[in-house]
Image (tube, rainbow, N blue to C red):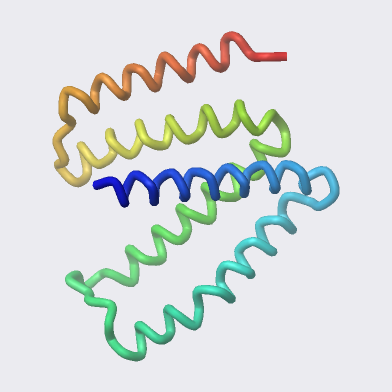
Length: 144
């Protein structure tokens, strides 16, 4: 249990560093170029691993339309990353990330409820309510 918490903290830290760095360089480089460069670097890093696992057939597939789902999730990720970088360019990083990520968790829970038939627990509903209140407070009382 604790290892997943540590892992989550490291991932959150890396995402934070990525957003702050993207904001910093967005004054000097077009957002489109940042998206292309980040995607290219990530692709170059992960392509050998992906090819290794595909060639060794170590990626189990349990669905016939898995290619469609992989393409769809990749398009969603590229779209989300692109729009995130645009929002970071035109507003404060803290406001953009503090609004987008809680909304992402809320939308994920709601979409999973409808599309995957996952149940929402009482604590999850309470967390969603707190997230909505937090987003409201952050955007209503913006720190100058």
